[in-house]
Image (cartoon, rainbow, N blue to C red; front, side):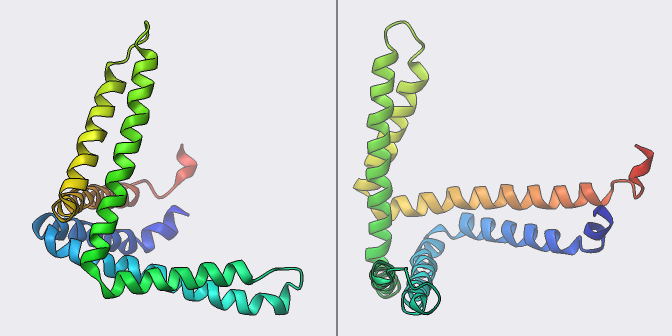
Length: 184
């Protein structure tokens, strides 16, 4: 198996390099990358919706007990959401930021509740700190949706850069392993 990998080592090296390029792009031009994010999400949701609609119509022929109505409805909703993401990118970015902001505030409230429950004897400082960070991120995202999406893009860029470098390092490491594992 390692020998097969060594013959195809270009694949993880190319994938890791592509992730590094995407990460650097997100770090250098976060605003531009954030602007194409709704296009990528919209295309994915639209494709999913079209597949769901098609499977809703085709399911009757091979699954007679299947009720395709919900699948079709879900597909049509996904098609509509995908089209909104594709046609109105600014609204889509704001929607993503607001949803993430509400999510962060809600989870911050849950962590604050956990911190207050731990206050009677158990360590609660980390829980309270986590709650404060989540509240701050949520408020920032709700106050400045477009600016916060650029910040998220930078964080995603750092993540892609780290993952890409990790894939490249792993590929190089596996390539340098001994050819004969019978010696171990």
